[in-house]
Length: 418
Image (cartoon, rainbow, N blue to C red; front, side, top):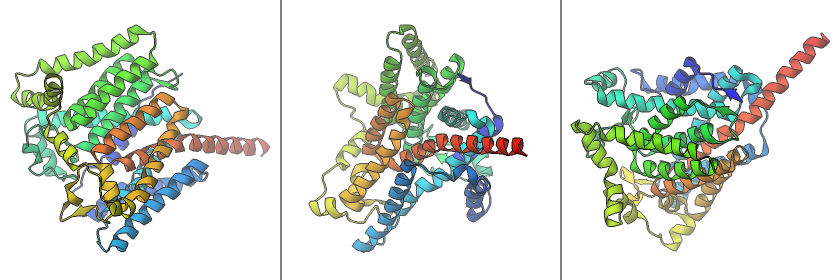
């Protein structure tokens, strides 16, 4: 087993490039910084990216088809709504950032690089992001000072004044549905690193408690759907990964309940009390009335419907309309069908599942849990491109490791022959 080796520089780079702050410069310069540095770093290390395996080629081709669809469908329907292009190109933009980190990690760990190194720093990044939220909300005046120095990448506007939205803020600005998705990823990854016998990297008890607690706290801050999914998948994961190891299972539940007890002990603070009320209300409703009876859930259920056959077959070519989602639909699955019908939906979902299957060789249970997470979150909102970008990047780790090892061995052979 390898031990985790922390690097302050790598952690810093992960934080500022995965969730970059808006610098007080023209937007073009900001984008050049965020994407230019990773692009040129990869360009100078192109030898690590020369080889693509069949799975990666298939996924990249399918994503290119989706990008083409996002341009063609508005043309065919005459809607001029090209807002979906941003979603479909997101995969390549995010992949650029992830590959930048994988190359950096390869330089650090050399032939010992493994998927678990990337997962560890990914988790660490989100734990730090949650700490950032605690600082922004908990330190008087810090939020105003921060956003006077850095602009909001994601505008919070009046949202933070809404009921339960107090902690839905990060160093980028508003932190909501997609951030709770990444905290769900992080909780499962840290469980895998700690509990799974197949993990090539093991973390200590202390790191597990800190990282899991912070990422779970992120679920509590940014979205209750993520909290529900994380609790369900966490229980399944630790029970299966620790069959007959009751002490390990007990240790997890002690950590989980200690977290909730600590939070409830702080209820004398009005801000925390209001937040806990918002966070727990749907679950209390479920146990007392048998229904979540929650505005967000009710709105989601109201927006789920079966479109007309013409729309199912060909789509409507609309993703947004007059500044909001087309037909005010909150569900990602319905949005997909409304935009490009069954063909585009089939390609996007096949690509997603196909990319998630990459993690199967590391751990089948982790793979199945990720598919479950995808199905639940996609019902709530568009997230498939988040999965494709992340798991496509993960597929490169082994490819780059082999390429790196091959290059190093060739240089050694050349030096010995010389």
